[in-house]
Amino acid sequence: MPKAVPAVPPGFHTLTPHLIVRDADKAIEFYKQAFGAELQGQAARMPNGKIMHAMLRIGDSFLMLNDEMPDYGALSPVSGGSSSVTIHIYTDDVDAAFQRATAAGAQVKMPLMDQFWGDRYGMVTDPSGHKWSLATHVKDLSPEEMDRGMKQAIANMPPPQTARKTA
Image 1 (spheres, helix red, strand yellow):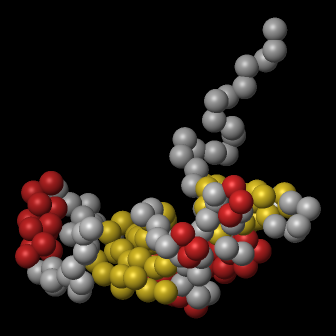
Image 2 (cartoon, rainbow, N blue to C red; image 1 turned 135 degrees about the vertical axis):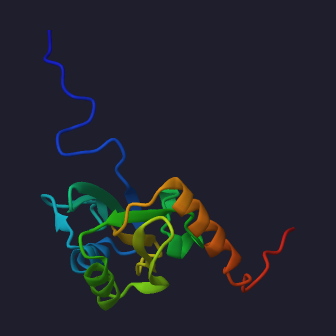
């Protein structure tokens, strides 16, 4: 009888993001500079040189990615028009991480601020169009404190810049 193997391979977590990017080689370099990513092994390449699969380690987690393959319906947010996903990274020093990400070419979507849930938090968009939130947990709050903070944050929200049009 064959030996049983774990359902989740060693080093992985139950959830592992897999991104489609416009230029995987450039994306790998960006993730190295911005988030301290380390390429695991070699990227698997198609005959045309495009990356079919690459695995990076960021902290204690893996991130998989591949180049766009329009013929197979695989488009990056840049080509597809948008991304409804935000990838979240907790780090010991969010200010330094945010600075590294923006220095590497990320665009600020939400500046760093201390948030009502106890995190110092900000958001960026990478050159491939993927959204990333970066945070350091700075304060444990009771549910009542979070509720008060949430109500205050909602009351202070600016009005939307543009209204969505419906068909």
